[in-house]
Image 1: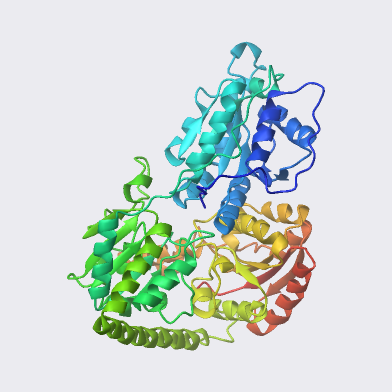
Image 2 (image 1 turned 30 degrees about the horizontal axis):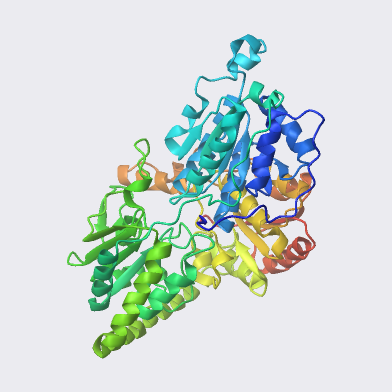
Length: 598
């Protein structure tokens, strides 16, 4: 969360600095990382920042602690998961051109997920006269930040050590100002390796690092309150609304005062799953009678308010045409001209540019005042709340019944997998990292605290790295961190398992091993049916078999405790409990569960 108050010196107990007889420019960057209170630095090593690496190890005494990652994607994703879980950023160091290019996909996902990450890079000497033959030439770019400029909030390449502190402070401010996102600062290798010519002043630690949050227009918010109270069936849609550590309780308060249903799109965990006003699992029923839709920091409401035909790409609205639409978000502030991640333009009746963390509490105050004055509207809200509670309970009953279908199937059904994991962890202080087992966790589990889930999974090749970051964020809090891990995703970055073992990051990985990239397989099935081609050939280029992967063996080879393949639901509970005991001892553990495709 961006902090507007004055920030004091580091809150962490730091190791004592050990200056050399000679001070180096790279020491200044260590000073900055400590002043800005960074606890960890994921990285993959590279010669372009060897000067900074030496300063971190010897001058900074490995504080902040370096976390060695076998791939740059893992380093970025760890910072991504850490930010989602805590609301706080980590720095990541990337080796010149090649390290940066390795990380591009992870940086893009962090950008579209609004994860604040302070990326530091280094370039081979910009002075061609001091470049090593070939190596420094192919590892040096004219403007290195160009590689990721379209999906970072800001990048800079200061040319002197005197320019570094201001560049660093501005990068931090841009990164943490909402809507948040990654930034990139790049340092010349010769700058990092040079002697410090004179003392360089750092930013004043008692001044604000980030500007205040953006408040809504008061007149517009008053109009929204009037419309909400007058509506017969208002629905709230939340996406990035409850960013750690803010927003969760405020959204619950607004919904309860208004007796309005809430649909959680899921970029962050916005609303308790078993709250009677949670309409996420019965969205179609709730939306078909809605006369007002309030989108709260929701980038693309069509995901939840429309039905998609995946073959024809046609979408049909679930919402009556007469319904009013209101949008409170960062709107056009987060638009990039390169990627169309911003979604369709909202044809809303009212559009308010604001941070929902300020708008929601004020809107609640306005709504409460109006309901107190109007007995009729208060009674209408109570009646609506009872109807929504009935919808919620019916949906939950349906889901519990559906979960029992194919209960004893071999390999086990995904609902059985989610059920068995829930039975094993429900009495623990647990956290689910990213994946949701094809939605079954949110249908069956009781997500009752804001830290239970940092937000929905992203694309393939992101979950294991993000899960590492989430686990690191909770490592010292005694929480049981659970990753229901897709097999195809893990195959992109299996080296992430080694990181957890090396740095003693306890987490429970339960493999969602359906032996396929089945999301794409489903698309090929749709194409085959649409075109009249053989459905039984849709698996080609999709299945992960012959050979099948020994995930337990893979985990053991990297220092994990692991349970071999479990195909029957009845055998999963004991395996999970053995693994949980290991995780509680401070070690990571993996259980390889073989499942049906969905």
